[in-house]
Amino acid sequence: MHRNREAGGHGGDLEAAAREFGLRPDQFCDFSSNVNPLGPPSGLKEELIASIDEISRYPTPQARDFRAALASHLKLPESMVLLGNGANELIHLLFLWKRPQRVLIPSPGFSEYTRAARLVNAKIKEFPLPLDGSLDKDGLLAKLSGSDFFVFCSPNNPTGFFYHGEDLREIIQKAGEKGTTVLLDESFFALTGKPLAQSYANIGCDNLWVVNSLTKLWALPGLRLGYLCGPQEGIKALTENGDPWRVNALAQRAGQYCLTAVNYLEKTIALVKREREFLIEQLRSIEGITVFRGAANFLLLRGEKDRFSATDLFRELASRGILIRDASNYAGLDQRYFRVAVLGREKNKRFVEELRRYFARQT
Image (cartoon, rainbow, N blue to C red; front, side, top):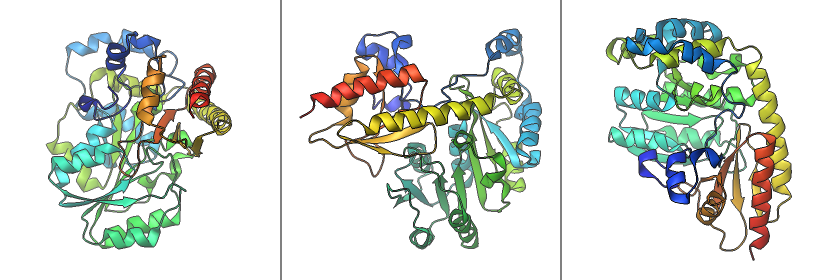
């Protein structure tokens, strides 16, 4: 189940887990999917119920009203913003439009970059990201030669490492000088607690596209919502030639509502920071686990005991109603690695207790 090809190897497939392990979907603590642990903003359910009649007519093309509100929130012109059915759909859309021939992709990194590159028959080259969180600027600049498309993710998925500063800015600018398009995935940016003004969507490089997931931020995986920022001429071309109804009516309504949710982001950041620190402290006390300190709402872990297998751990925990993300199918990682979301305190405590029991039994 954890390698379900229909889901691209991602987490969050509760129906498949329920079938395989004999539980109901609502009986799982889902640490495999890294959406906002606070859940959707209070009152959103009632807002969507009140708006249900909108499903009988076409949604507003290009999510026009929501796009205007979001652009204002981001302090960007509307002409630089495109809405989509989640960040992943927009990643694939950009690949299909640009049709790069040679793509440079981070390792480890989100698998959808590779899937999108394969969809357009691009030649893929990977660059390793050290698991100490460092960034080899000179080495990366050297690898840019011969690539017409470069993908980067900050915070990175699955490590959670946040790369922000002059080195990344210089890499983006140097890529532009080489004629290389840059796609920067900032899907977990807001969950680091950094102000939106620090997003690279604001630096104004003509070769830079920034994708972000509102699905993750507002806990809307069943609705799907994301946005792409890019050069005005490029966004214009995608707007004029792409699907005008990419965002459904209820997703647009949810977006409008979530933008106005008072103190929601502040509560989210406080919760993620508090529970991430709790998990790091507790997990580091378990013999046989290495914890990589990420800056987002998930943590990458590595089992250090002989013959440890993330696949075995996945199955053991799933049988007890806890889902984790086996990270062994990320490029650059092996069977020792797994990823867990940061959830609420009671769920986090339950996970730690189950993990402690599991590792105590390992010899």
